[in-house]
Amino acid sequence: MCAICGWLNFNKDLHEKQDRFKEMLELMSCRGKDNTGFYFDKSVMLGHKRLAIVDLENGNQPMYYKDYIIVYNGELYNTNDVKNDLVDKGYTFDTTSDTEVILKGYAEYQEKILEKLEGIFAIGIYNKKTKEMFLARDRFGVKPLYYCNKDGNFIFASMIRAILKSEVVKPYLSKEALGELLALRSF
Image (cartoon, rainbow, N blue to C red):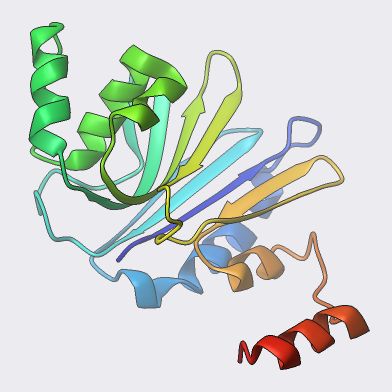
């Protein structure tokens, strides 16, 4: 289990929010204590809490390739198949991490990489050149990925409490939501 987090705002300088972002990521420490990694620029903050299982030395994130930066939580079941396909296309790999396979697969196939992936995952890939953020989950939604888009802020995380820590969005419980919660016994 790992945790991913991101905050994008192309209308404001996010440097003043870096400490808050670190607190957001720290709230998800229960999902991974082996490594914490960050990417910061003026408009984008990405973070990752890692529970190291594969490639303990080289699998830390965010991971970079050309203009792409990935934060990833999950397990890819067909890593070798996707990797061999990319090797046939001329790609080389520096790690044995499935993160690198997904990142380079995205560089090759863009969003169509999802058609090739078998596993459970939540992925965030930022393109520094085009200033686009790609988010995806596995088909069954096993790995959590929450997001909000408010007032020019786009925030995503593996846990809702991290998004709430941003203070961009305030928690509230409507009567309708309470009714659904009680009817479904989702507590």
